[in-house]
Amino acid sequence: MASPESPPPAPVPPSPAQSRAAGCVIWGLVLITVLTIVVVFLMSFRFSVGGEMPELRRPMAVLQGVVQLDDRSGSERIEADLRLDDGALAAMREGDGVVHLELDVEPSPAGEPILVGVSWTSRAEVLRPVTPLAVGEDVRWTLACADASDCQRTIGFQIELPADAGATEVAWRLVAEVRPPRDSEVPEVATVQLVAVDPEQ
Image 1 (cartoon, rainbow, N blue to C red):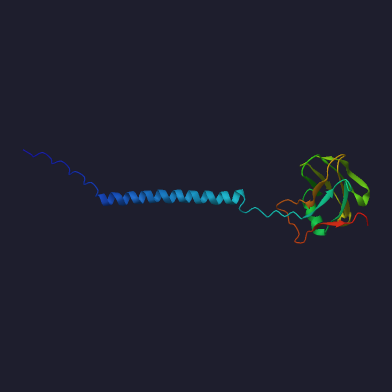
Image 2: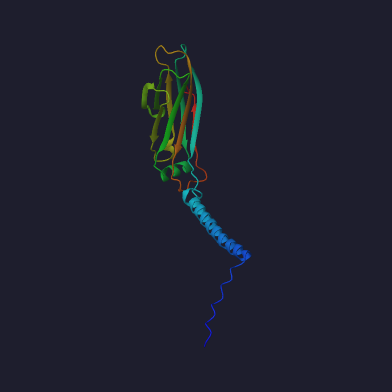
């Protein structure tokens, strides 16, 4: 009579050292995968959001000062020559084709609105009659010019105290700039100028 078959040998469980080694390998692969995903995401975010955005160049000029208005001198007129060279003119044409101008006035202490008027003195053209300008408000306008000589104009602006207003000091700031697109080729020499002139000359 044949003897019954002996049962197969039971599998030998892996040793604790082998289990730890296998676990370390698996977690190491998981960590490397996660780090790779994070690095790729950060690099794509940098390039897409602004890491390599071209430089924004806007040729501009700023002229500013302070006037003292009181009972003896309740009005002040200021004039400035606007000038653009050929580089600034080319940058202007790359953009919206105009020169952007802005006048800010800030009375101290802030009280009633100051009266402000703006004109092209060289052309006897009124851009804004002398009217109240609320605190925090500014005057903005644009100029389209065909060539550099056409851009040369004299800006005149009048700052006055309203009737029965007390003495106050008014800070003013005049800005002129051209706005080419970010990716445009702005010439290396592109100059916008605002040069103060004596309105009595």
